[in-house]
Length: 552
Image 1: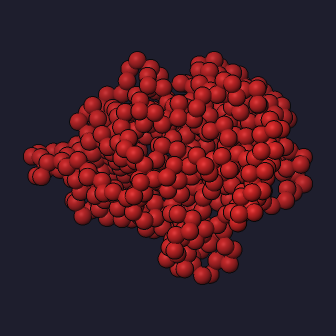
Image 2: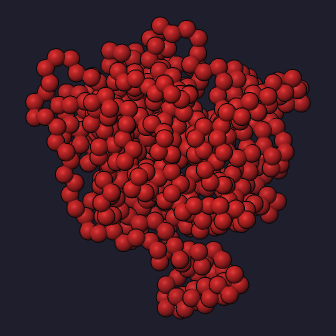
Image 3: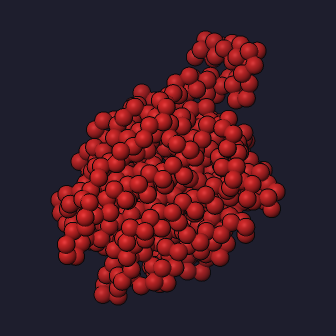
């Protein structure tokens, strides 16, 4: 290893001497990894137009099944939209995203399937806890794990890297939802729907696991967990780099700006990624206006790397902090594009016969370095605190879901599966446990009780269960359990475990029983990243800050 580090350092020195600076000058192990990642980055082909498959030219006679449009934001915090009275900044309202909740239902206790992106997406697609089929961790290349596993945390709370597990780790392309799982796309496809995916996938990269092999008739997007929004040197882009964040450093080095259509070679999109995906979604909706369709529009906004269009950045001169201004500009752009999708449904006369769902895969990330993304909740992405898993969650369906309604009982991402299936009159699989439930009867008041009495989350030895007012977070690094009374303390500021040992014992037994029903992870977690629950990355830790060790 020392020989390779020396060679890498020499290469870096030569590159720096040649005028290629920036992150190459980091040097050492990380510099070598980033250098290799940049060398391996694909070079997309020039842009080409997508010819969406055309449906019937005339509408069918009689009553038609409802369309389903699932819009998923990436790393959007609870406080990034104005629906809840806040927003990433007062100058950035989100009227279009808000309208889905105002014209339908807001799930005030809407929970992500996991606190990181890929397992949450697996829950959305399958209606099941991703741990049931071993999809426990987010697919990442070993180089990424090495960079993050040695770079997250602080001097008192260093991350832990498990180099001995590398031999058991498959290539990132093979880290996929098993082929035995049934996706909501496959279910609706079988029910006669034309199924379309746009944007991020992150559930498998091989020919057998890409979207168009898992139930989508058409797929336009990228398989990895992130993408550039524009080229870094584009005249129309404003970048914000977090030099303190190893994740950010890896993404800037490794990510291409490219998309694929149904397994094609990678090619450049036409313009800023969020705009481009929306342009194509509008075209796809028009192409399918006369047949039932399912659109899964999985934006990569507002995930890092932080890149805004100059138009959106220039529209927010009142935000002095550069990073917050770029981030806010991305939120502004995302909201406008959600509005364009909603307008396309209206223009085609489809908005009243379409179930529209909006949510985020998890809460806002600490590694952006900004406060308040998940307010009023504590915690971030990659923690099971409310800030990491309580997300915007709206559904709109005119005449079926009462406009302006609020549903307070806990619901989860995996409920999208059963709800969409019910809307499409598609039978859900009977040969396996489906954890999600159809929410429509609960919204109509025809179902008694709550959709879920208990919800679970797990990432390696970090486990969480919520039952009624109680929420237990149990971990092994360090070995500690925190108990919170969400009814009295929704921000999880007061640990009441010591005062309620019987509750801790009951919830621990539930966690153990749930674990016995789950599968072994398909691949191991290479690192346990130290995440400060209370202070974003890039700012000094404060006395009393709590750290969570997140396995991935």
